[in-house]
Amino acid sequence: MTTLNYKRADFQSDQEVKWCPGCGDYTILASVQAYMAEMGVAREDVVFISGIGCSSRFPYYMNTYGMHSIHGRAPAIASGVVTANPDLSVWVVTGDGDALSIGGNHLIHSLRRNVNLKILLFNNQIYGLTKGQYSPTSEVGKTTKSTPLGSIDHPFNPVSLALGADASFVARTIDMDRKHTIDILKRAHEHEGTAFIEIYQNCNVFNDKAFQALTGKEERLDNQIRMEDGEPITFGPDGEKAVVIESGVARIVDTASVDPSTIHVHDSRQVNPSMAFALSRLSSHPDGPTPIGIFRDVDRPVYDKEVTRQIEAVTEKRGPGDLQKLIGSLGTWTVE
Image 1: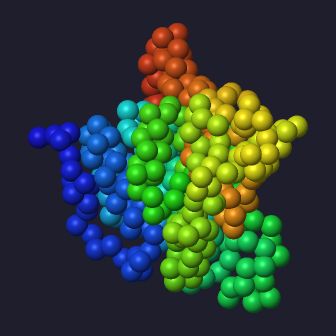
Image 2: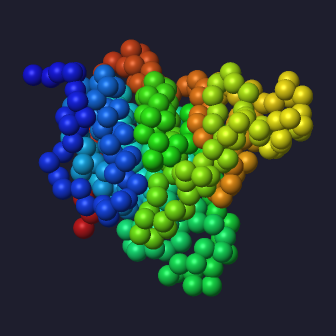
Image 3: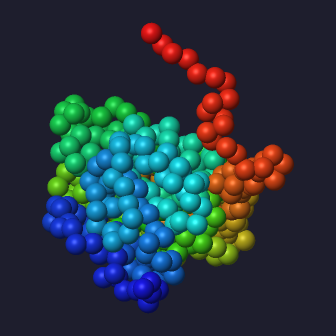
């Protein structure tokens, strides 16, 4: 008998979790399982689909339906699952290498189509599963086994990329902040369409403390730019820093140096993504002040609903289809 009085334990599978001790993935897993217990969706109506990488072991550890699919293709497979089964809650779990390298094409097209998916991008700025090569989000100069002289690649900013693809929901959170992560998951679940969440995730073996500026006890208040709808964006231990936008460009200023009316008031519901994009450019990787929260949350037509609407319209006009008749309608051939 199905019950919705779930606890986190109801979403824990019987599989042994095989991440490195201390990996940030553990905290993300705990946050997702905790949120699933309160999400209000029957466990058998939830699906997790992943690609390849450390993060992509995630479906094994969720006591839901799931699929550990092929490299970079999770958004494509998930698009098919939710389009054919629009009542399911479908989640994609991927990493910076999986989603932004081999899977880049699939990611941007799911974002622009606005398929009803929730995409969790674990960004640790490294290939962890294959033992420490630089990834599409590694910073310039990153020294790894594959870049012994330092990376010369300019890194992706995943939030900017998603906004550039016109994603209808874009957010960023941090693995260690469970409350913030759960708040973002809740908003993502309530959103109709593709919800893209970048989660900064510490790889304590191959890229330890990559997000120290945002998670360190001494540094985080100076560097976390928390965005709350309807609130002016200020940060710092005593709010001594602020964000203003001039000529479409976001800048950090001393709060005392500007008229309070010029401080940018955050509004994730703005249809035009320009302000959200400007905010995303405040940081290309978290060495310094970095925006955290929801950049954009707007309504757009949802792909799978549009497909269903088309099928219903055609069915009403022409009647139900006959697959066998279609297959035999143009005759058959024998190839010798």
